[in-house]
Image (tube, rainbow, N blue to C red; front, side, top):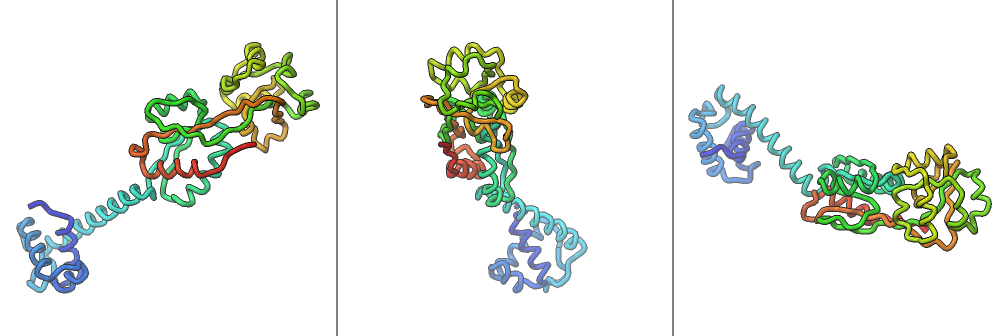
Length: 291
């Protein structure tokens, strides 16, 4: 007969209490049931563990086994607690990959609440462009992806926000003087910096401007640094321009309805760890809409 954790619990209780009756009470068993289990344990060990029938003193072997039993019971209880914590999303590990503007603007408010409610869950969040996010999700390198992408086979896709496109330039750029009537045609002749999000703008009047761009940059932080340095202007979603960028201006264009759509990508719910499912629910429950 293999040694079971209940045998160890029984032995530990009898050793701690010094009697079958007291051990039976804390184990919520009858004294006869405790006696039978203890006898089975001693039979398996092949030697007596107590020096007297009253169970008040352990043999030298019993003392050694008691130490091992206590260690094993403690380890077992920690394992059970960890498993239950994982199942209740109290523990675990969540991997998130998001475009930079979403990581900077959207996720702080989500993470602030989630961390308070799940203090034992570890979170790894990375930022990347949309194409890299698609690759990571397909390679199972993340649990949740936040990007402007079309459907990815095998993943649920849910829209979490939209925000409008506009011109991003230095605050002292001449375009800021008449931004209330700004259109695509006003951008011709400027040093335009293209970026990956420009592909989402389906507007014939924008195409010539995009085709004329001599510089194309994929990383949002790099684009904003170039704009700040006066290298050129660009077109980005409003959320990409953080409030602390006081030297930059976001200028919405007239008669332009183009908006960026950001989606959350997740595996099927049945294949997501509970902690990741709770994170996805927290993202969906947060209001991000820009006007």
